[in-house]
Length: 218
Figure 1 (cartoon, rainbow, N blue to C red):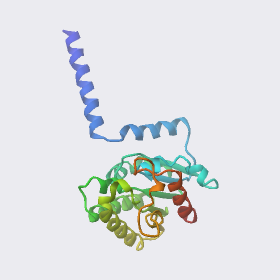
Figure 2 (cartoon, helix red, strand yellow):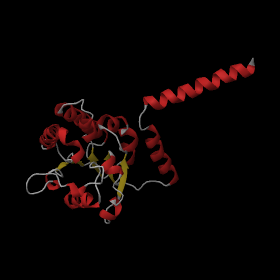
Figure 3 (cartoon, rainbow, N blue to C red):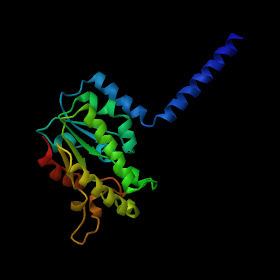
Figure 4 (cartoon, rainbow, N blue to C red):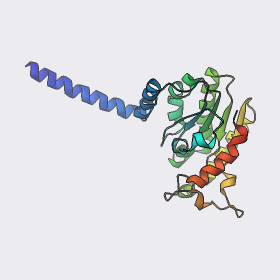
C-alpha cells in the first residue's frame, strides 16, 4: 500500500513540475542566469543588455565595447511580455548603470498583434523599469528589418515609430534606429547582414549595431 502511495505521489510531482514548466516559458534560462550569478558574481553597475535572440547571440558584446562593463541577459525567442515578467529577476537586481533593450520583433512575428499593442507592451516594460530604477538611462534598439519577416514590416515600422515618439517624451532615454542602416540605397534589406536563416544577424550585422550604439553608451 505504501509503495502504491509513493508511486502516486511521484506521478503527481512529475505532473506538477511539467505543468509549472509549461506555465513559465524561459524559466530554465532565467534560472541559469541566477545560477551563473551565484557561481560568478556579476559586475557592479553594468550596462545591461536584455531582450530576445539578437541580444542573446551577441557573442562579441564585450569585445565590441572593450572600455565598458557590459552584462548580457538576453534570452532567445522572448517577447515583450516575457521580458516584463522577468524584469525583477534579470534587470532590477543588477542595479545597472544603463539598460539596452531589443525586444518586440517576436511579438510582431507572432502575427497576432498590432503596432499599437507592441507599443503598449513596451510602455508597460519601460514604466516597470522606471518605477524600480527611476534614474537609470534606457536605450531601445529599434526592431530590425529581418528578410524572413518581410510581411510584418509595416507593423514593425509603425511600432518603431510609436516607440520612438514615446521615448522622445521621456527623460534619460535613447531610441536607436538600426532599421535604416540595415537597408541599401534603394531601401531594400541588406541580406548580407544576416545568417542563412534570414533572421539572425551575422558579424556584419552586429558591426552596424556596434557602430550605432557606441556613442550612446554611458
